[in-house]
Image (tube, rainbow, N blue to C red; front, top):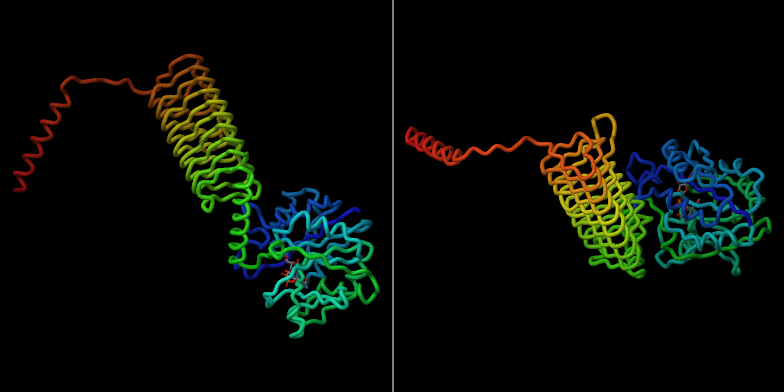
Length: 450
Ligand code: UD1
């Protein structure tokens, strides 16, 4: 059956104490909203409608960056989840199938759970979870004779209802043909004075429609309301990511100190040292080795390559097989072909390094002239002497060499040696004379002072 998604993301998130809209706070390197949208992709929605409000422009931009076909609607005042869904309905005109309502601040919902909801045959299906913790918020699923009859919000619940251990996750699925009529029947006579989406359950039941409850583990429904929640969520994500990496055959020497992004991909038999941080879009092939204290984002590391300790790979760093990147090396938007070595204290930006080229300590690609970025091309087997400044745009031919300490401003032909530094002059005996002079001067000064 066809599926459409409505993702509610209009709330202010007051408790985040932030100028940034809540759904744009990041978990494992991606905005909360993207986590919800990614989870929603599991049901291959025909349409995705995002309801924005607070920080609407920024949230709209973020939603479209993830999925440029997303339909964005604005809820001018946050009058409740029912009102938010009502705003989305015009975008679902003509749609036949199931509509799933998700929250933009609930990042852990799994594809399996959403598929279960998408496959439900009832007119309205609510996703709940069991807990004995008696939380001081959240709606309770009221069951009568084994059937879900309504949801009561915590604020409106009687003491007996507050004891119900089946809690509303907030996620709901509804037959598109019914959603409009149910939402238009909602009022706001409740403790919060809000239009509760949850009330469609009682209305549907009263009208004799089929209402069902599905359940999932509580951890899937974790919503982010505060910085403390966000920190808890990050911890939970990292714990799972570490366990998954270990299970899939990755060596983590000190798992608790390795931080993954939502999309980190690491092949079997790769090894990751302590205190390594992955930003988004990193892939590491089997058998690669990342040593301690590296920061990687937007890069690809091939089989047999070693990186670090203390290396920083930025977006566009592409390391082919058996490349060696050592300590205090930064690489950005640069391709290193097989066997290239860059061992120490180097910056490579906007560059291409040929096979087996050797980049000496302290080399810098001077890629920025204050206005534009320029490229450096280094041919296969080239040897870049220590402390070479490569002033881009510049090309070093295959098998060429640069002398240590050179400032290279012109292209170097294949197999040539380029010297771009002042010629050395030796003055025989001058050092000794200078030392003697300095000592005599020092002796005179001490006498004057004494
Ligand atoms: C909601 C449920 C509650 C459930 C809980 C689980 C209702 C009435 N209550 O309560 O039963 O246990 O989630 O977390 O639905 N939003 C809008 N526009 C609005 C109001 C909310 O877009 O006018 C969005 C928020 O940005 C948020 C989501 O809807 O992403 C949930 O809103 P929130 O106010 O946090 O609902 P809860 O009070 O937690």
